[in-house]
Length: 600
Image (cartoon, rainbow, N blue to C red; front, side, top):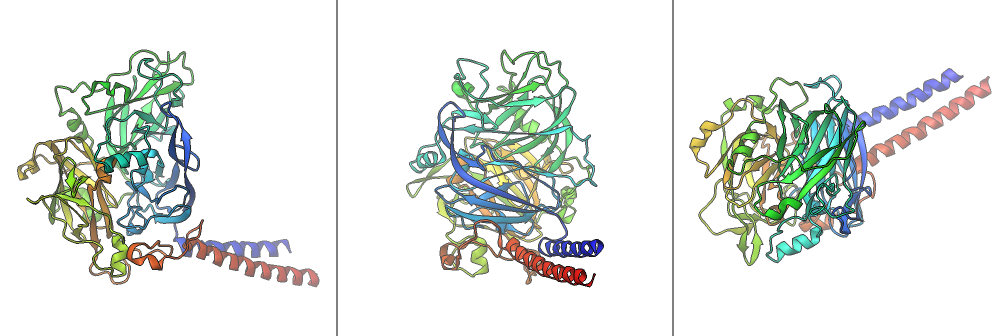
């Protein structure tokens, strides 16, 4: 009888496994619950309200493996709308999950919504954060790691451990006060400090760092090699990252393996992510400084805007003391950081999970179908409001997100008239988006005529960073492009008074956000969207349909149904089937057991 029962139990779980396969496909899934709420902390010695995730600041690490189906239930316990976006993760065929206002209605306060997406053919170091109204300036961010499948070898010896470091400039004002200042026409000014993993600086200098500041300590063992993943999640400041007396062997950035090079320090711009291999090869006579200091600033009092953590060997013989390791000495050579950025190259021989549209790793020999020049200028007054622009257009988010407007034929939600180059006309606020060509191969020139270095980001894609320079871009600059092993990534820097050129293959249908990652400029309207439609797709073959749990707003507000507070409708459907199967199988087993027992 035991064997009989075992067989039926096995049959029951096989049925359940089949149901999971029907709902999620053949690949495994990972389920996360993230609750966004306010807590009070004092990272710079001043009590302030920050956005925590599951009660933590920064939020927890989300760790999955290539090809996993990811289900993230987000509970909004803030007092304002919320959307979560996934920096650098390519939402293949599903801009519905992108978490920006052009594609998603926001999650209202005291509500929940569930993101569902697959990290198809991706690896690397990423992070999540709230995309609305400068909320990232108050926190709400956390790391997102996609590890290789075991059958895909790493292009380096497997590190002993992983370490995540999140750096960023920080204000003691919260995001609401910061955006009110911008609304009133006042720029943000100098930040109050730099945080490392949500903590203030180690007291390396008593005249700069007040007493009682809590700092981050990274514990390591001598002789081990660590993969250190560093993310700049700040507001607007480029930071130079360095570890005293240790080499940083660059290995990966935003999902792509790099040619392995040693750096003593690296400039990490807002929104960028890097993986370094760091071997603990020092004698540990004392602890060592980990430093993130501001770049491209002139004010002498920026010295206090420096993040300092401690690297502590398990056999350390004392505390770190003395001056911090020096930043790059490039005051007389402004091209140092540009040359460093262009030294970051793709590891073209590495195997790994990565999308390759049109064989685009041979990007240098693909014919360009369209060229877009996106020019940014210092913020200016438009209709009496301080605004930032691309090509003279300050983007206004539509009341009805672009994707929903397309599906439900909402007229006038947006315009497909974004200019492919700057026009000689006064700046204006508008809802202009780029009408891009599916499977086109485009060149984007980012011309930064603003006074600050900026980061440019593209959702849904990675692009090849082919060239950078100072001055006004001209067609002659194409002769300086790297057409063989330029790094592929989703966030690149554009230096003040300079340009950056990128190539991208438009194989991912949807509506994708193009923006500056500098939160003040983004809030002031320096963004647009790229609408990519497959004209031959009449059956959702190249793009996912509207999700069952979609939120509705704007012209479609009446369609909104109350949302469940935990699991997405897909999982609910699967769960109902599982419960039904469990009930049926239990009844059958109970009947068979009764029958068998009575027969015996």
